[in-house]
Length: 278
Image 1 (cartoon, rainbow, N blue to C red):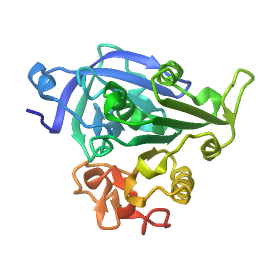
Image 2: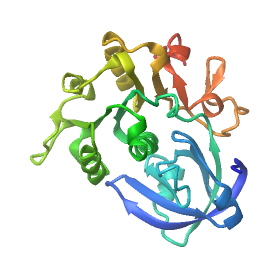
Image 3: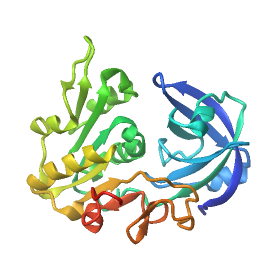
């Protein structure tokens, strides 16, 4: 039986990996083995990670949902709490609440092509989607992965992208606004990858995550290529503080990103998506 931890449970850091100058992946394990055995999550859900004496922040779960013990969270050093989290070492302890939110509709995508489009660290929330599809490769059609970063040095998990590219009926396309001399991918925004993508929008479902301007541009490309709005799903980022839809910080129209998202069907929110103030 799965559960959601609404109060912080103790978790121990068992591994730390410096992905880039500002990004760290923390591998952790719930200290209570009974809780660890019951913990499950859906691709796209998030946990609240609590740094003792500082506070907590929402972080997407970037590990494989079929192996929820241990858990991996990839964190960018951008604020006071994340600054402390990325400096933790094996043996340190934090608090964990979760999992929260609505994940990606991976089961609804069965028998369809899956298009995954991400920007920056937006790749972290969709890593479980890619793992899920690859483990059930015969249940899905073509898998197209499009990832964009500002600088080629920002691309983390390069070995994963190489491994995914070797999977059957899988296309991996990478873009960087600025590339170094060793960069073999496309130079420019992620939207430039649509020229290379082998899209079959008549029977596809798209999952997008990253900066909202990037998402808006990619959604427009998908719509122009004939993908219906109800088969476009996006992961939203807002100021999520309680994760229960009670504090109101992440309100998005009549919805709350922490409770009703962070994954939304574009058809349901297109009247608000991209509007200033929402």
